[in-house]
Length: 270
Image (cartoon, rainbow, N blue to C red; front, side):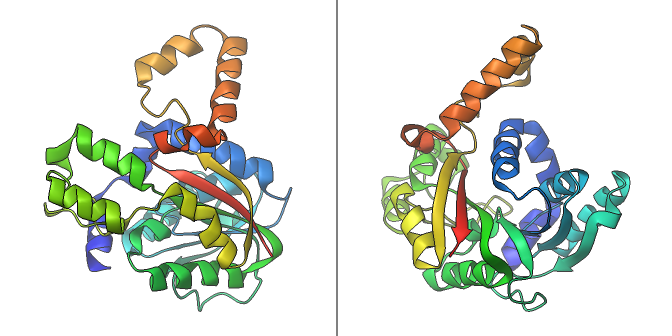
């Protein structure tokens, strides 16, 4: 996991969610929709804490954990900056595969919006999901991010030199067979695993969760730029709200899931 820590220590994940706002906006919409009205929420694999801080602003008690020490420190700073530090029950450096610092059924709901696509073996992915199951209360909601093979194939075909070794038919064929991606260029996004969409719900069900929804976090708007968003905002508040209603509706359309770089699984602990 050293390469993952090194990558995220240098990468501006908070800025990425600002530069690609639709992922955060769509995820936030569905997370808020399915969370209980109050409670203690775990953000596991939280990065710099953008979701955790938003939940704290809404009045939830939040515990944050991430593998990368530097990101946990940024999250602490952001909590102070937004004056929500009192809503946090702790900031932990920890591995999603071993949440030993938390008790069984400690959390009313749990987020895991990153770890699963950086665990390249089935054993490690199962360990992480079982730990999420252990620390979440029975009937508690979970929100888990996945990255998909079909979208990564499309991106690799469009920009082959940017996603080596997927710049050759051999590399692409191996990727589509295994779902494993290790970037050939030092310092790039690496150490990743991409699911087939059809395997996501069964995987979570096998590990103790009941599926509630599967959402395309980019919906149909993942490629929109600032000037395009500005255009629709310029049409007036009512028109913009209706545009966003369309975006949210299509995010939940199963025929659109392959268009999104990230999917949000929504489930309930059995």
